[in-house]
Figure 1 (cartoon, rainbow, N blue to C red):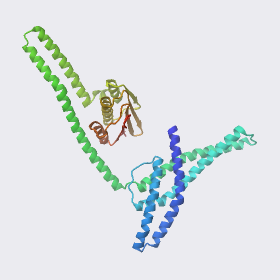
Figure 2: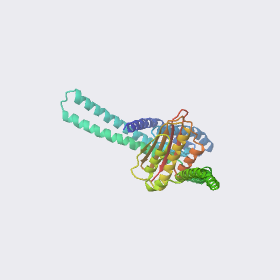
Figure 3: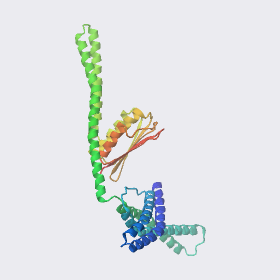
Length: 378
């Protein structure tokens, strides 16, 4: 509720500022159109007129961008002077309408306040009339507040239409992203193969070599007591090799993810962690296999990195879903300073990018370190 109120206040201020900007934008559009019309057949004069027109248009458009960003409408921009002028030529109508909406809301709030004050502290001669006025004012206030959010949405869509990247540029950007994510997937797969090979070589293989040597020494031993001791050591080595092999298999892909679901897999990660992990799991239903797999590995690797490098004594993991987006948040209370371009976090970023998601790391010196990821899960 507090976040909605804060957003409503920001949008109201944005609409008021936008309505005030009409006093500058409308004369500018009228004078610019008249000046360009007068020099339409004179190329040199047209260039002279276009220079100040372009400068003022960009200044007004950048002001609109800052105002929209203040209201929460932040998106990529890619516009030229012509599109900026078209935007300003159309936006003033929405600016006036937004001002009327805000004034209506303020009028409704004023009447509601007056009616409430009169009802509580004054002697009312016509209570029915006051009650009807108050009800009408409440209805006006409700509609105006709804219209504030609607007008903010219309303003954002208008700006995105005129100031956002064109369809061709958006396709080019998308192709570049897909090419980058594909390269990232290939690199991530190769890194995963090297990690598995390293785990098998440095862990399981060494255990098996030691096991073979112990069994060979047991076969050559003359003393029965020595043979029993060597066999006992060989049995311990085989047990440790089996444990490490299970660890490697778990890191490759946890079978519990398919057998019991994402929540159980994440609870297992929390239980196996050397640092206490608080899991806040808010999903009402299981995501699809691809999203669940990426979610598991992002959280598992992030927790592992925090345990190894952050010197934290507490880790909090949150998994939430809003509309068609899955939100992950892993925060530890360690010393901070995590490198987002390090091999571990960069590998997680590539995993998320392969799913067309977003990955961010905030780790100021002194902590805390917060890792967030957004995964589309339509």
